[in-house]
Length: 241
Image (cartoon, rainbow, N blue to C red; front, side, top):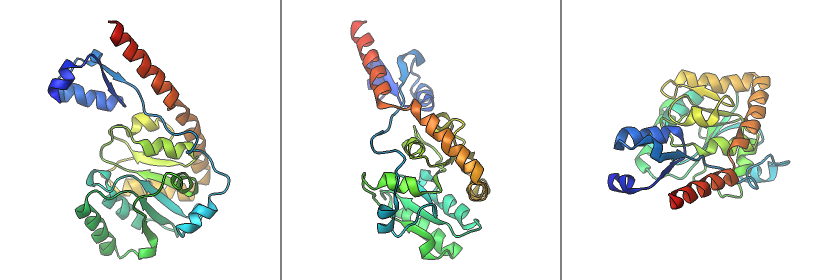
């Protein structure tokens, strides 16, 4: 990797945070690194009029659950998320939709659930969710939860926003850069911080609606057409230099 980076005419990262990581780790000239944000599939991730038929197949109802989307890996901070969920007042469900690439961590999550004596029906582990169903899960959620310890970008943030779903995410790494002022930012190392944000959206529907509207506006920044044009322009300038 160091050799490739030194020999490259230009380097593209998907966030300023990743750019800074490359600079610090490999001592790369910052002028050589260009930030081009990810986009999302606008045809799929959007507000849907009736998510109920799909949600029913998963035994879910609109607005009754918080949603996590992503791999089941340790840096995703799911054990703290489960502990935060256990502190909530109300009848919400926690839905974990993600491919498990680290079996020991899934065991750690299950151990945490057992330790907290959470009823199995309160937490649903769905494993992989199809591309067709995922937008419906976003649409029906009270909020997306991404209290990760580190992300290079955080694609579920913009997918959820495009579906009109409020977002709760971390105040570190790339998450604040991507979410801007359109999400509730929490300290991912603090279970109380995560729980307070979740409870806030349950108790304050006006705040949830404000986040929903802010997210729909924020996500207009992240279009693949814009990313493609920037990448094309960069490739052209490199080839001409």
